[in-house]
Amino acid sequence: MQNRFISKFSIRLYLTLYLLVHAASSSAHGGGATLDAAGVSRTFTAVVLVSCFDDDNGPAENLIARVRDNSPPVPGLLVNLQLFKGNKAISITDTVSGDADYSPYVTLHGGPGVYYMIITKTDAGARSVDAEWHCQTVDNIHTGTEISISQFN
Image (cartoon, rainbow, N blue to C red; front, side, top):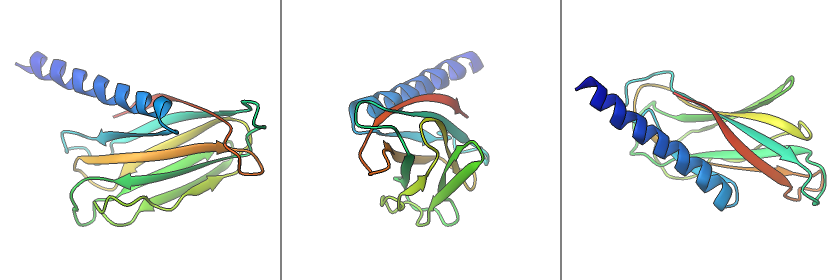
């Protein structure tokens, strides 16, 4: 019975990650997933590596990102997004649980290279989230942006 649960859980996790990566590459750099589908972890963390590069629009100067909680409202259960690169970091919280509105964008000025985008929640409970991210030039022109999943648990 336990192997069957793990198997179904693993398949759901794989499909969630696949949809997140596929959505990121097929839409303008956004995607969604359910953090902690079982709803039992207080420390569930998603870590995404965002690579910013010159795709002939110019060299990357910054990464902007925002997050949205699509779940039903739960008092005190919020989602957070942090950007980190080198010795710089910035964060934003979707301050209204389950309102389905995006947080404001945050901008991390880290130049070209790999940024860490970390999405967490403040307590136990499943959260359906969307994130949107874009690498930009110094003139705020969209430039090369690719992602890969580093952690999802």
